[in-house]
Length: 428
Image (cartoon, rainbow, N blue to C red; front, side, top):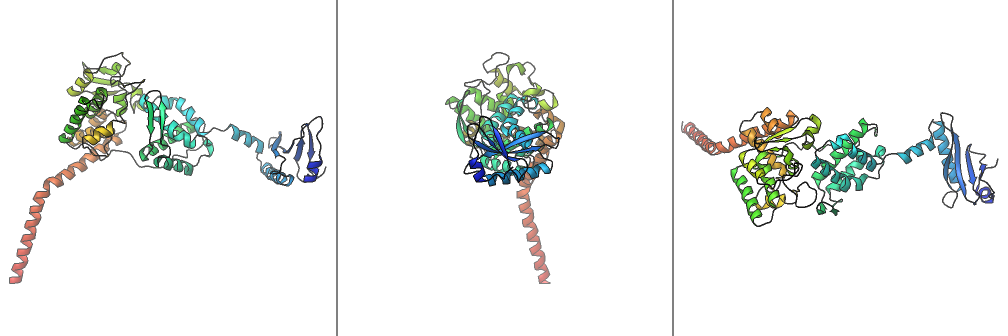
């Protein structure tokens, strides 16, 4: 049994059948010669369980010589000696889930389909437009926190920005940004958490990234004047046909009830009872419902009832606020910045800020935590307490502002009294 050298490999000729020439230096290292004349280096070994395996190292060529192949065979021999199975590991890697495949499984799971339809639609967009292009081809079990961080940075910097054709709305503008990056990584973390529970992954590379609690935004609608400008702007834009009546009414509805954007956009006639003035969202139609299994009740003030009553009626499963085209639900993300700018509202005020405004003003008016939870449909008391703490801070600020004039006079009088006292001391 000779040593496999370049000369030996070159002089070996093919026959009618496949045949092997084994190396005298490294046990299991050999050359496989095909009837066609092609020559491939192999390494044969036994697994720790005693099963014989033959691993292909590579085809003999200018880029893979006999000496190079022998070195690779030695490396594999060390792995076998350490109790590993190189070929089994290679096959396992070939069959390993990619991040894209893991996300596909998650989207089909009860954990995902139990979310509200609007949440599902938004999350599918984040998967298809941000996560899949950046991470989809990575192996799920070798994805690192550093790679997730790089993907986050890419989304934040707008590297996934694009214009994408959609069936529902024709053309979608994907912009990215910090908020989208944060939510995309949180979605990836949720998918990995599900995968770990179901045996598809052993760790969660996205769990180590912390963004801080989105919590309650400080930007809200402060007073009646701001609300007045909002409603006046909506009416003006509607009169000038710059906003569809359904979109304008959906924004009015959110501002009056504190409903989530998805709850308003996805509202169906089946859930509305104008006689009692109540909306009953089933568990899968609101954020907390798929966890609690409980419906959410939205009490309608008279103005909100009037808004719903003037919408064109339809089938029980039709949307109350009808989209302009497509299957729906109604999209408000594009028109809201225009409304906000024209109404001269703070640039940081999102549609969710209308909900925060309701919660904060209720807290400032003395609503209890239980009342706030009921009104806003919160699942956790900690979420509600943020409104109360924020309201307390706001009241403190208002108190300071209210007392500022009196304090100026008080400080002035104190300073004057001090100066007089010092003069008297000096005179003595």
